[in-house]
Amino acid sequence: MSGEILGRHASSTLLTFCLAVLLSAAVLKASADPARPAPLQAFPRVPAVSGTNFDYLVIILMENHNLCDILESCGGSARYMSNLAGAWGLAQNDHYCNVNPSLPNYLCLSGGSDFGCGGYDGNPNSNACTSTAWSAPNIVDRLEGAGLTWKAYMEDMPGNCYGTNSGDYAVRHNPFVYYSDIVNSPTRCGRIVPAGTSDSALINDLASTTTASNYMWLTPNKCNDMHSCPIGTGDAYLSDLVQRILSSPVFTSQRAALLITFDEGYQGQPVYTAWAGRVVMPAYTSS
Image 1 (cartoon, rainbow, N blue to C red):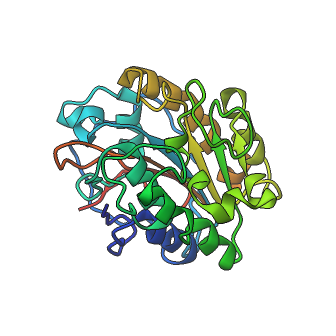
Image 2: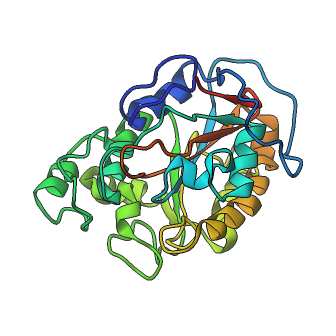
Image 3: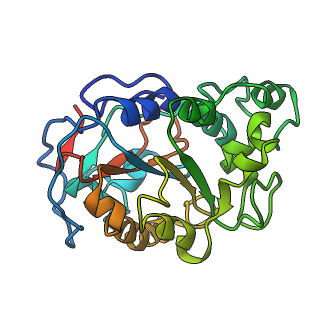
């Protein structure tokens, strides 16, 4: 993966990238793209804030579509996501996921490597590559080492830190349970939680800086993330959820940013990656 959306070239993995977001320059720098559509609806707006870093980051991982499956300006069908990108910030040409299927991308996002798991979508610690990941350092180690807090929210997960598939919960979409120093820690497992009805766990935590973490990850279920349901289903899901995130007390009062991206695309095409929040420069795209 690669990307350039923070005024400097991001590294090849989102592990380093997300830490850079939290610990260094974080205002989105880009050139305007007049071809992008104007928003159909008003997005929550509050005054921009000064500062050089995000204090709070929410990441939402969607599934299995190229940028132009989503963006209307190049033939896509996701009206809300197109307008979100037009109102806020879009990494239009610079974010790629060049390995399939899902699992190796989630490992890259959380551990800085696919650990040789290209072509494998199995359970934690279940073969040679996942055994390598099992003992590897990961983004939780880096976050805690930097004095930052974190929490992961999983839709349809039966219980904290759940390590097998269940209904529309896919364990391969929960990278945190692929590392032994997370799974074997009751404290860390206590921070990998079911998202609750309508993602209430995340929204409730965004009500206050005392409950919000610096780094918050949300994995939608297999329908909401577009894995098993049409693009329109995921687009409608985000149209409700994003409004609630951006209108939350943390997002309206703090240096908070929302990142929406996809685990993988196909045939070397870029994936949709959009940013929103008070520290994001509005109506810009990366160049």
